Image 1 (cartoon, one colour):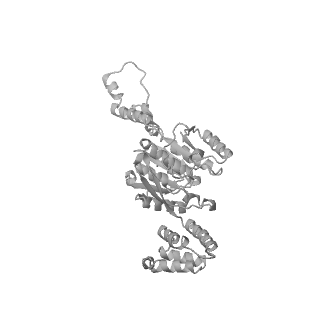
Image 2: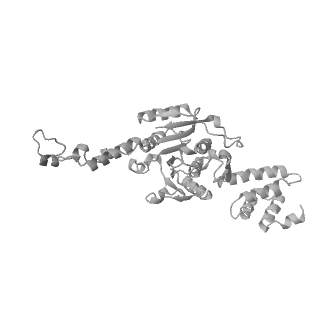
Image 3: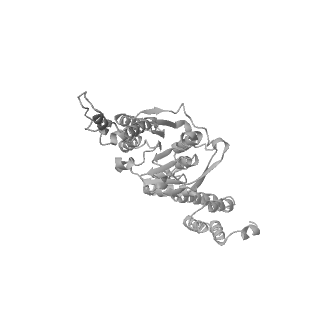
Length: 363
């Protein structure tokens, strides 16, 4: 190794390289690697290990030693949620999304992993931005927050992300900060309309109350790979049914009907001998009735909310159970997979199999 190259290294990097060449234990190497990264094996440290240790290891015994070290290094990185950058190109405009996530999904760290359906739903949002721009959006089971980041990118008027797992929620907030999005948890604040603010809430489906959910009433609900656990499906369907149900109409919320805006509790005088004074007493409050009619027209003209769910059907029985529960809740499910496919914005991700993912609407 050139002397000039050694001079450019920091003291902690020199110690790491020396320990590797001396075949110190893997635990020792990891400890020194963390020191190089200020407590974490960062991308810079990983590059250093590859450039100066693994690719230049020579001599008998280094091959087996290197494999053992790499195996331990990968476990270390995955357990601490590695950060990678997802490059998406919606219509030739490059979007880079840095995400802290776990690559080790088999150990149960599902909420901090990037699942194929979240990639698909993100592609869908970026392919059809006009469907989401200016709309209030609510995601169930938001995981790493990728879908929410894409919703903010296409300028949804309101973005609320939810998850029932607190560590996942903490990681999601970190990802939003990495993407320069402010996060809020106090839903009582009026700043919820600020497009730079993404709301993050703790929402276990099993304990979500109707009163709590009715405070949101979004125009669009989204979910990626949320149809997987049979025990969770009744709670998920309950949440969707409440979010999809419009608030009661203005007329229904009033103490009485339109008739009650008339004097005499809505009773009409049977006599035909009405003088001017009695007619004046029975006169309709036209401004109030006009307001009621306008509210009713507004309610009818307002678009119904819709849910978009992207999912890999891993178990047919589980999916059939979801369909049955949705039917009981008077929800309609439509498969849009073949009619509304997103653009292929991630062509370089060969591990991402779009063909196994289905897209549904729930109304």
